[in-house]
Length: 209
View (cartoon, rainbow, N blue to C red):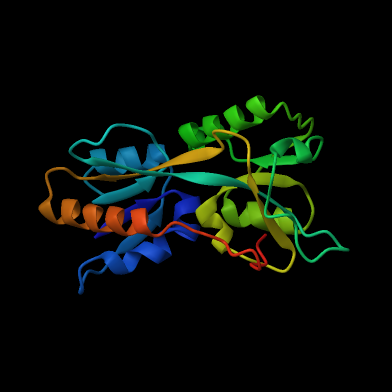
């Protein structure tokens, strides 16, 4: 089973879903952007892809519930926890870290839309290469960034996450599969069912918050 996944999904959500596959399935997983997944399906090199795109349910495509967005930031030296949730405007003026739009256009646009609606301004913007690079930079205090809820599974003593309470602070999530493959369709449906039930609900005593 050849599976492609956006970096945030590969690091955050997919490990929680993979056991939904049929026993005996041997997944071969690769990190792949939306464009890379599109090429993989066109070339017959992918069976299933997890990505951050929108669309109506159809053969070969299953939309999943929207994921809430969180701010990731370095833990303050004098406090053990950040508030569980807050408006994005609270972080206005911070150095802001984001991926380049070509990596995931729909997810990028969702983040930019949330920023614009919040009225927050981030005069200094740095780009990161992948989620490992991003979380390391945040933990070192280079800046803040916006992540989907599933990525808050990645924890470290120097990281804190706060849910963004602004309206519409969500990002899409979907599963694409090769429509001519019954095996791929079955795998996609199993992953989708598990994903719909596997929403992250951080506890109030969770060190992520």
